[in-house]
Length: 80
Length: 80
DNA sequence: GAGATTCATTGTGTTAACGCAACAATTTAT
DNA sequence: ATAAATTGTTGCGTTAACACAATGAATCTC
Image (cartoon, rainbow over all chains, first blue to last red; front, side, top):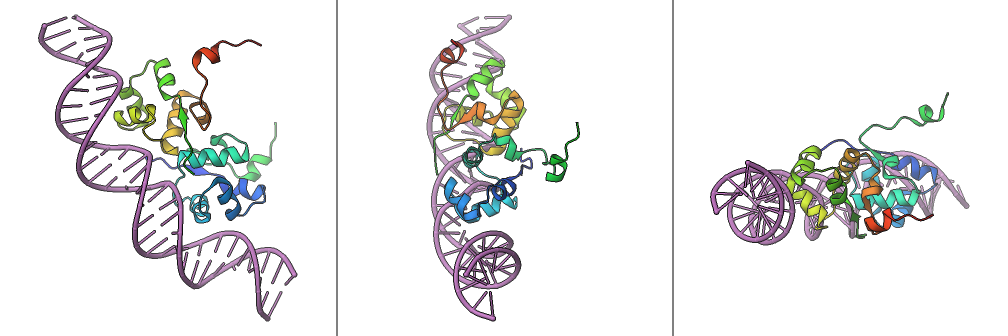
C-alpha cells in the first residue's frame, strides 16, 4: 500500500466561503488538521473524509482520489 | 468526532466470490485486516477504503457509510 | 478421515492520524 | 497604520490502523 491520495479540500472550502477554522468545527476536528490535509502533509481518516464529503454534499471521490485532479481552468473550459 | 462507520465489505466480497485472502492481496493488505474491517473491529484508512471501492467499481459511500445499510432482503424487495 | 482452506482470536510492535499549544508570517478589515 | 483574522510551522503526546506471527475451530475437498 501507501498510494498518494490527492484532494480538493481547499477548493471546495474556498468555494463555500469557509475558513479552515469554520470547516474544522463543522466536521469536528482541529483547525490545523484541515491545514495539514490541504497541504497533503497527511491523509484524513475515512471517517473525516466521509464527514467532509457529506458537508459539501458530494461523493468522497469528488474530493479525494488516487488520480490528480484537473485544474479548475481545465475542468471549466468544457468543449463538447 | 468518532462516529460509527458501517460497511458492506463482506457482502461485496462474497458476491464477487472472493476469500479474505484474495481481497487482501488485491488491495495490498494483510488478510486479517479484512477480517477486522468486516467485523467492525476498526475502520479502514481512506486509502484502503478508496482501494476497496475502486476494486468493486463503486463509490466509497456504497460500501462505507455513517448510516446503517438496509438488509439485502429489504433492498432487493423493491416495490414502486 | 486426513489434509487444505477459510475464518476467528490474541498478542506484540510500528507508524501515522490526529489533539493541543505556542508563535511567526501573511492577509484582511477598520 | 493598527488591529484582527487567517494561515504556516514546530513540537510533543495519544491512539488506532495497520503488519506479522501463532494457534485453534470450522468447513470443504479428496
